[in-house]
Length: 113
Length: 113
Image 1 (tube, one colour):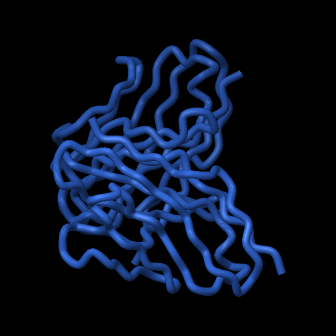
Image 2 (cartoon, one colour; image 1 turned 180 degrees about the horizontal axis):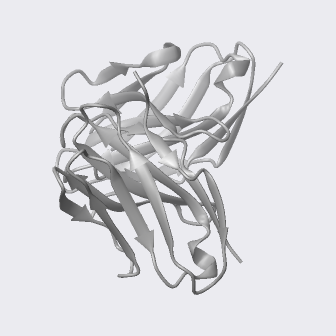
């Protein structure tokens, strides 16, 4: 059974650009959530989607957005990139919203220059 | 608001020694508690979870954790460390939904021969 797949794994952008990250959940999983991991702030919750609806959102500016498609695949977008957006972005999927077990992908490492 | 405090950003043990990683939580409601492990350049993997059943929770790879409400703690232990246990460990809490986790800052476990 394939795990959570995130693309791209690594990318470099410059300030002011925008970026789109993609996440394919485990087959059959309908809940997808996104986390940002940085050395200073640790792991921070970005958003959670279930059946194409955003159910929860973390404390991030509006430059961070996401969506989920009917096949449960999800994308997140960051516009007007800032140096502080450099981070590992992790996607996690679960069978239902409340299974208590998240399956994480290996992440997309974004570097903003 | 919920929060998690992990005592010690780094813990060093010898192979075969007891592993003890500390986690204290703050939650306004009965919490759901988790321990995740992250190996280098990988996503997070669930070790174990507490969901108000037994207070002593057994997880994968010989790890276990005990929920102590009076101490608001959920410490992770393993009787005998292996070299393969070297990784970063994260404690997490949720009281709003299992997919929305608040993580601690993480504890890097170093295992020496």
